[in-house]
Image (cartoon, rainbow, N blue to C red; front, side, top):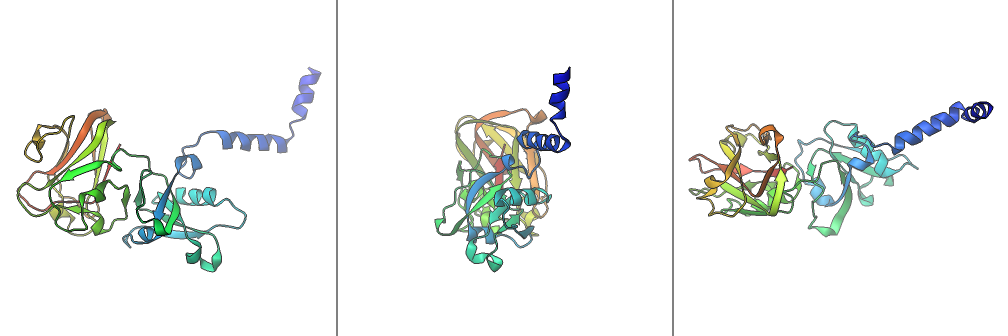
Length: 273
C-alpha cells in the first residue's frame, strides 16, 4: 500500500500533463492537419502558379525554429477549402523567410511531374486514387492541348486547357479508362469545366464498367451501367457517381459517354476511388 502511494506521488501534475501530451501525439488522428494524412508530391512551381485565379489560395510565413511540414500541414488543415500546400522556392520568398502556399487545387498522391526544372515539395491531403496514371482511350480531340491524358495525370488547377474536349464529329462523345488490371472501386468523380459554358458541354452522361475490351465506341453500351447524370452541369460542378449502396465494383475498363446527339463534350478531371 505504501509503495503504491509512493509511486503515485512521483506523478506530479506537470509530469502527468507531459505524459498526456505524449499519448496524444502517439495516437492516430483523423484531423486534416495531422501529418499522417498528408502525401509528399513534387510539382513544378510554374504549374502551381498556372492555376485558375478563382481558386482559393493564400500564403503563410513559417515562424523561425518551427517545423515547416508540421506547421503548414496544420495551417492548411484548419482551412475548409485547403487540400494542398506547397513550399515556396527561396527566390520567391518575401524577405527570404520560409513560406508555404496553401491551395484548393487537386493534386493526387500519384502525380508525376514532367517539368523537372523548377520542382518544389508539395503536400496533399487527398487520398490515392485509381485513375492517376491509367491508360486512356478516346476519339480525336478538338484542341491540341486538351488531350485525354490531362484527365488522368493526377493534377487539376481548374484551367480550361487541362480539360479534354472531343472533336465535333458524330459518335465521338466518349472516352474509356483502361486500368491495365482489374481494380475495385465504388466512386467515380467527374469535373465539369469552370466557366459559364459548362451546361453546353456536360449533360446526359453515362458511366459504365467492363472486364474486357470491346469495340469503341459502338459497343460501349455492352458494359454494365455504373451511373447516369442528366444535367446539365453548372460551372465547375463536381459530379459524383456511386455504385448502389457504395458496393465495390470490379472492372478493368471505365467508360464515360455523353449519350445525346449533341457533338460537344468536355470533361476536365477524373478521380476514381
